[in-house]
Length: 172
Ligand SMILES: [Zn+2]
Image 1 (spheres, rainbow, N blue to C red):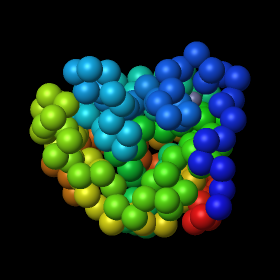
Image 2: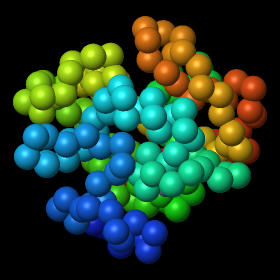
Image 3: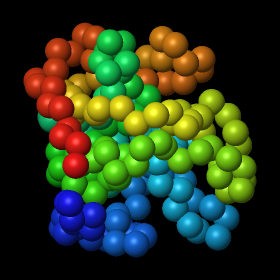
């Protein structure tokens, strides 16, 4: 069994944590401040995608960036997940229960109602889908496009930016 609370990289040590895990910039919170891991909401997702900011640390992405993609995303050459900087991607692969296969299903979206977050398309980005095998797609850049199959959802597309490499994330 892997360590579920890996060491926090230096550049993330100012971020808030919950149960030993860094709370990503992208993660919405309930009214009383509890992080809703695994959820995305529209405004934040759009902000991170269009400003080209890392979804964990919030810093501008550099010349190498990573998007996590499922098989369906690979077919479409895009994902609604905002990208990550390489150190945050390395941390996420170790820390994130969804990526490392410790969650069989994503959390149900009913929690977003509790959180007072509008149940818009953004909050359904990861709605209760079965867990898939994830890949880390290494890119130099992406285009912000309208998602080809999700109405009014933006996505990072690598159709015009051939990946530097695509690495399967091993299940643990
Ligand atoms: Zn980062």
